[in-house]
Amino acid sequence: MKDIERGSTNVYADLGIENADEMLVKAQLATKIGEIIKQRNLTQVEAGQLLGIPQPKLSNMLRGQFRGISETKMIECLTRLGRNVQIVVKAAPRSKSAGQVSVVFA
Image 1 (cartoon, one colour):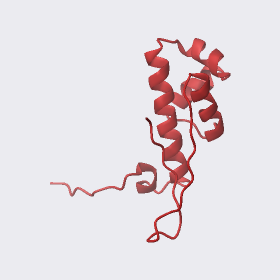
Image 2 (cartoon, one colour):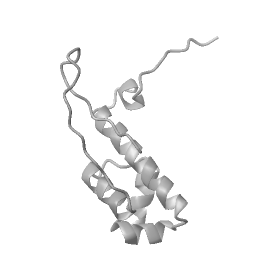
Image 3 (tube, helix red, strand yellow):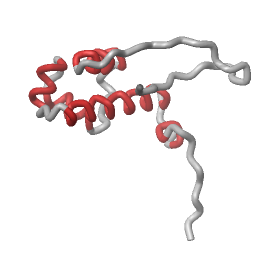
Image 4 (cartoon, one colour):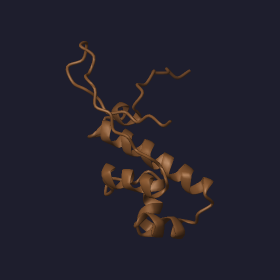
């Protein structure tokens, strides 16, 4: 029987990937972009035109290959898809030495 190890809430950190927090945020944003594209029944070509991204680059992003796409560009994609994006900055808990970035969808 194999041992089961409990992971954190960030698979990228669990795998030891550099910039794990950034990668998790991008994954969450890409997932939401993909959901909206699907809800709107857009083809990748149509979505790429709307978002200002070539279809192959959009396809890569939706498959989790988003290293060449900035968080800013992904946020712009969400606004082009009719979503409001609000960035909230607040103090980190005193128990932590550094803050964190998280994505919350309303």
